[in-house]
Image (cartoon, rainbow, N blue to C red; front, side):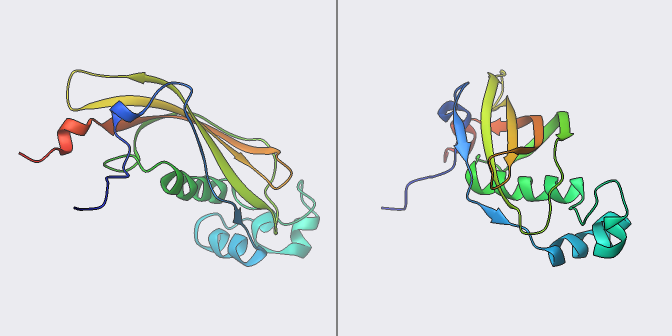
Length: 154
């Protein structure tokens, strides 16, 4: 027999269900590498210059935090067909992410719209927390999730 299917289908999900990720540390070098490529601002690139800014030190780009949260979501919520977003309803950065912070993601299902076809819409709220349990980012999104019947053979 093959290994059991560990993917989550629409039928496996319910409002109020939660998923928790593993922890992910973030280093100064990772912050700078992401910033050089995608968000080249002084508070993401250089410790000395960052001290003179609003943040008073090096911080990760909010987009870097969002990208890390996406990886943690994919790892902790193995939805069949992948994480396919239809909308971001809210994205807020609540606290700066600094070198040596350790992030984790808590995801809750807000509601499910079953739909008439082979997929439904699942609204989720993802809260990214640092090592002190402080929320650093909140994301509310709508995802397209497959029904089990869409992936059944024959």
